[in-house]
Length: 212
Image (cartoon, rainbow, N blue to C red; front, side, top):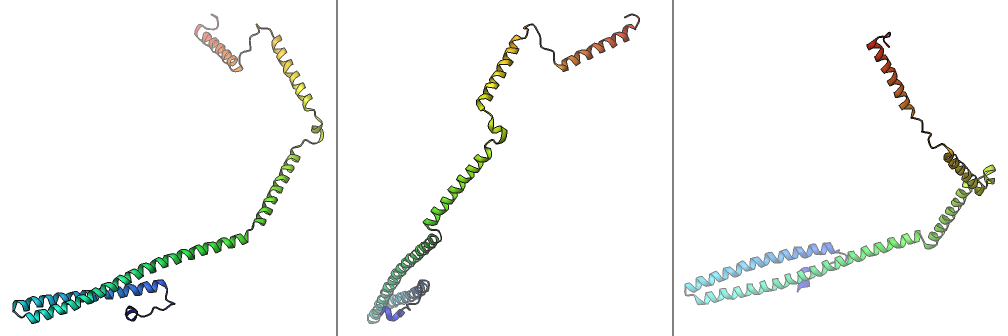
């Protein structure tokens, strides 16, 4: 009966279209249920009126129609429950399918990248980099090696000569007289000379040339 009411879904329909169709059907069932509820309520009101009018037979007929409406309402409720269950399952299946498709796409992309760069190419590239690095080190060492006359100098002899120079300098400093005071800096000598000239000019101007 359920299949006859909603029809056999087309196999080519996608999940979104099917969910939309289920939602439309669910709304239709809910509207029909509201109509039946109103009709059942109206039969109850009629039964009350016939009861007040002492028309027992007519009141019972109203209650029978109310029971029929209630049976239809219960049936519609079962239909709605089945639709809700199918929607939940379909949404879960849709999420599962999308997840699998995403994982499949990622696996294909990874496979394509592995084809573009395999382990042999990586090893070959690293070997070339190491070889180029070693060649560069050799070139730098060759450029830093002394050539010509500088290549013949003995480092030990140069260090011995430097030690002799340092010893001679120290000996010369020790032989200098202890009383010899270091000469005043040049700027101090200039300041003292300028002070003497100013003092002389001041004396001449105040005492006069003859009183000096």
